[in-house]
Every structure is written in C-alpha cells, then in structure tokens.
Image (tube, rainbow over all chains, first blue to last red; front, side, top):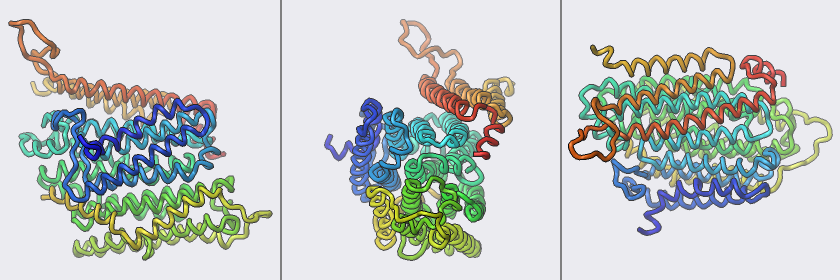
Length: 495
Length: 119
C-alpha cells in the first residue's frame, strides 16, 4: 500500500499514538511540543485527505485488512474531510498560539496528562468523523468525551468541577441513548456498518424497533451537540474551562456530534424509512428556531463574556440544524458551511478571550471596562471575529448566513418566516456583541491601566484566526466546495 | 406468552428508567453516578439479550457430534467494550466528585450551587 492509501488511518493514529507518549514526557514543555507537532501533522493529513476526497465519492479504508461490512471501515467523504480540517486546524492553532495561557492555567504536575488528554480528544473526534462503523463511532465518542471532561476540569477554576460533572452525566446519557439506538438497529439488521445498515433496513419486516432507534440516536446526539433544549450543560462547561480549551472545544466538539447526527439521519434513515424527512424536520426545525431566538436573547442579558459567547454558540448550533432541517441541498450546504465558518468565528473570539484573560482577572463584562485602551490589538481582532459572528459582508459568517437565507427563501411561504428569524437573531447578535464593544471601547477603564497587550504568540495566532475570517469571507471556495459535495452526497438518500 | 417472552426487554426498560430517575431525582453526586451506572448496565442487558440464541452455547470449538448452535458472540464483544467505557466514565465521575468535595466541602448538588453562586 502506498502512503496516500494510509492517510485515513493516520488521521486517527497520529494523535492517538502521540497521547500516551505525551503523558511520559515529564513536566516541562515537551508534552506541549509533542501535542503541537502531532496536531500540525494531523492537520497536514487532513489537508491531504480534503484534496483527495474532493474529487471522489468516498475514500474507504479497511482497518486491519478486514473488508466491510464485517471489518471496521474508515470512510472519508468530503463532509468528514471538512470536519477533520476543523478539528485539527483548531487544535493546531490553539496549541501553537496559547502556550502562555495554558502554562498559566494548568498546574505543572498536571501538564503531561493534560496534553495526553488533549491528544486523545483530537484523536477521538477525528475517529468519529473518519469511522464508517456505528459502534466504532460510539467508542471514539466516549474517548473524545472523557478526554474533553479532563480538559475542562484541568484548569484552576473550581467552578469548572460542578460544570464538568453535569456535562459528564448528560454526555453519558447522550452516548448511552446512541448506544441503545445502535443496538436496536443491530438487532433488526445484524450489521454495524452505516452503509450496510442503510441497505438492510429496507428489508426489515417490523420497523417499530428501527423507529425507536431513530428516536434514541437523534436524541442522544442532539444532547451531545447542545441542540436546544438539551444545551444546559454547555454554558458553564464553556465558561469555566481553561480559556484555550474553550477555544478548542467551541470550535469543534458540538459540530462533530452534529456531523454524526446528520450522517446517521440522512445516510441511514432518510432513504430507508418512509416519511422520515417529515419527522426529522418536524422535530428539529422548531427546536432550531427556538435555539436561535432563545439562546440569542439569553446572550443579550448575560453579564459574563465567556458565558455570553457560549450562549451564542447554542444559537449557532441552531443555525446549523435549521439549515439541515430544510431538507434541501441548499439548506444542507448552508448548515455544513456554517460549521466551518462558525468554528472560525468562535475560535477567533475565544482566542481573544484567552488573550484578555492574560491581563484581566475577571471576564465579567463589568470588569472589562476600557479593555480596548489596554489591549487595542486584542479587541480589534475580537471585533473582526464578532463581525463574522453577526454575518457582516466580507467575513466568513456572511457566507453561511447568505446561503441560509437563500435556502430558506426557496422553501416558499414558511421560508419568509425563517428569514425573519435569521434577521432578528442577527440583530440580537449585533446587540450582544455591541455590549462587549461598548464596554471595551467607551467605558472608562479602572485606574492605572496603560497599554498592556497579550504575549506576542497569542496575539499573532489571534490575528491569524481573525484574518482567516476575512479570507474565507472573500474566498469561500474550499469550504463551500466541500460543503456542497457533502450536501449532494447526503441529499442522494432523501426520498 | 409474548409479554413473558420479552421479559429481558422489560427488565431493560425498567432498569433504564430507575437509573434515569436516580440521576434526575437525587441531589447527592455519588447517588447520581450510581444511577448513571444502573442506566448504563440496562443497555448491557439489552445487547446481551439480543445475542441469545435458544439452545445456543458459547461459540467455541466442539467435539464431533455435539450441537453446532451457538449464541451470537458479537454483542458480547461490543458490550465488553461498553463495560470498559462505563467503568472509565464512572471512575472519572467519582474522581471529579472527590475534587468537588475538596474544593467545596460537600457533594450535595444544591449546596454546591449556592457556594458557586457566592464565588
């Protein structure tokens, strides 16, 4: 086999293999260095896979040489390639940029294990999107979740502990629901391979267990993805975790669960169950609308910067689900490209938060008065990320919102109402972002605050992320191409 | 009778709900984790039940003349993995509870809530 054929395995094996090594490298900077190198290597693999996956239907890889459906199959589609780019890109950017922040927040003795957990999270998330086997996805989901719990609790803020406990309980319920669903499908079809499942469900005589499975799988994954009203674990888990961890998980972890949700619901169920599309959008569309409106409204009155951004993340999950539940190619494209664009915007915003946290002890809005005078470069980059979050033309966020509006308009009369929802929630985003801008630029800072910027590597990475928002706003070719081909592939299954 | 024929699945559903109830209704974090453990164990039962073939034995090499029927080994293997995952989850959960107790001096949910609010 050539090197290129081994890429799908490497995408998972590189971070997973590096994880135990990182735990053995002692308390210095070596574990961080290894984690960064492994992340960048995985990012390179993801780029190669994205190029390879763009032209073909799927790259299939039989683990251990056992052919699917009996062996475990890794299956890289353009959808999974896009997600791999998000995961490894976010991990590389955050690790390379925020060493100073991580050093300040993670106690020395914990560092080797912290970076091992980081690599396990990257490996687990990559495994979820690479795998084509339902049970394998469950195992990778738990690998990434357990590692994420460790990352969130790895900092010095004791409020993270109750938050992570809640996340652990709810995340485990979600994963267990998924496991029940997979078990019911296995019971009726005798297979765990996703492609094989789709083919065999058509031949099942009694569909009741399958319908129950649809409910369990959808609900379990919606819980993990933070779909409203199953989002209650999210705000505190994001708010009290180490700032670098927030930037990483906000960029990718909910999106990976959404990926599994879409992949399962479209690939396995849409083609084989009559009326599934109606049930799918009838269930998720109202939740998406509520997510967009309620979460944005909550963000408008939130007094803590990180919690404000976390609530905004819940609203953004709503946009993605909204796009998908339109059940059109345009809607799916919008939803999937929003995964990428939101990762860029939120990644940049939380990197800015990490920069702020190096100089400000509290991230409550009231304590950030005049932050832009003290840290003008950080707050300027924050503003760029915020513009992208709102969806101002010229930023990445605009591209996906534009596509979402176009897709909604195509659905007829109801579409106009959805456009109204999107516009209103964008205005709400303007409001909550403005509160931050107003505090940072126009409030009088506390006494004795001169110019005091974040460390240079953090600032450089923050600006790289902010400029990426502008770049992909003007040149959305790559993510759009991958999203469009992902949406086409998913829509093939819709009846 | 069909109801008794599905006995295992009834136990699965009841255990699942007992676990879920404990998670929701108990304020003590360790009891919540116990509920979570029961919740997960219910799923193990679901998988093992579906693997059973009536009259089937363990799928191992047999002497000539012995019956060939065996239970489906795959769900057993899957559940071995899920049990390991479950143990890790509960262990991590308990570790977090220990840390919570160190930081807040209590493992009752409402008391922790009020202490977090005071911070």
